[in-house]
Image 1: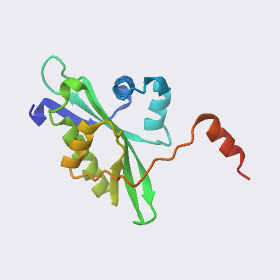
Image 2 (image 1 turned 180 degrees about the vertical axis):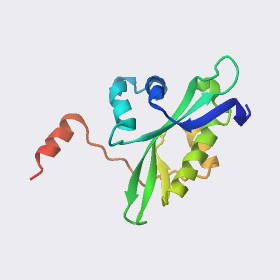
Image 3 (image 1 turned 90 degrees about the vertical axis):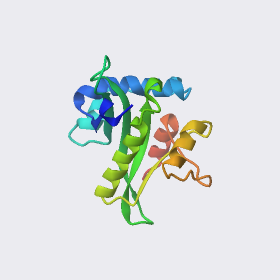
Image 4 (image 1 turned 90 degrees about the horizontal axis):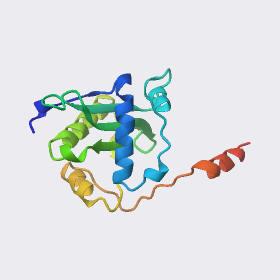
Length: 169
């Protein structure tokens, strides 16, 4: 599919329902639907409120019967590397509907976010991938990413997060 068949652009408030739907598709693909608590209103506030916590780009079809339909999204935010002394761009989620994979959308999305990271003076662009998703791992490696085997994700959520917060002085 030629790049002209889809339009890559920053998300708009009107895209929030489509992004929320794609998040549910992603969760089903990752076999994690039971973990999704996403509220579209909250997502809209976090993307477009007075103090945005994240950003998103979408791919919409430019031609054919699906013209204007959002078929992919990337949600990201900025972090900071103390070692590099520079901000970083962290890709939280990248999802392309299965019927549109292999069309160049994922490649274009990663390239666009890499360009944004360079423009913003970021020292790195990073994301996580499930260890069983060998198709994605291969794709990312072809794009030049290194999958870091010596790092692990640490996460505190729910009651454990609340309990840890109570320990603050």
